[in-house]
Figure 1 (cartoon, rainbow, N blue to C red):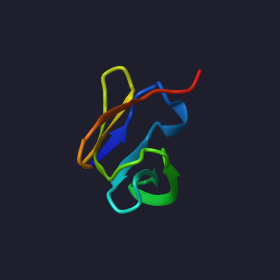
Figure 2 (cartoon, helix red, strand yellow; figure 1 turned 180 degrees about the horizontal axis):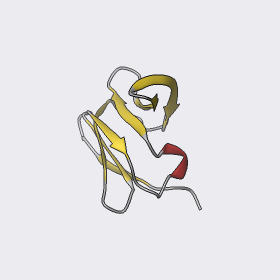
Figure 3 (cartoon, one colour; figure 1 turned 135 degrees about the horizontal axis):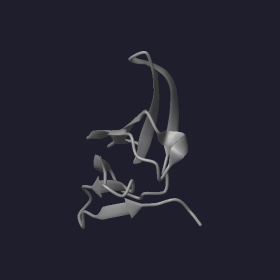
Figure 4 (cartoon, rainbow, N blue to C red; figure 1 turned 90 degrees about the vertical axis):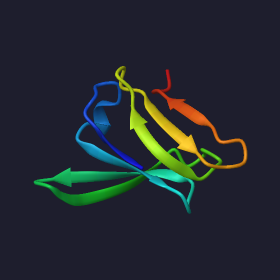
Length: 80
């Protein structure tokens, strides 16, 4: 799954497309400009499971769903 990030909790991600990676077990950030991908960055590489879906909550937190045996919903917020 994927989500377009428009929230303010992670200002550096605003305007990016966040895409779950099943094979590599991380989230890809696609940087967009004029509707085209102009950059890519691997995020959250320590999730420890295949990323099935990515969503953004109303508070701007990023939610990642894994599909391992004990599938998890992981809430990601900025480090303090």
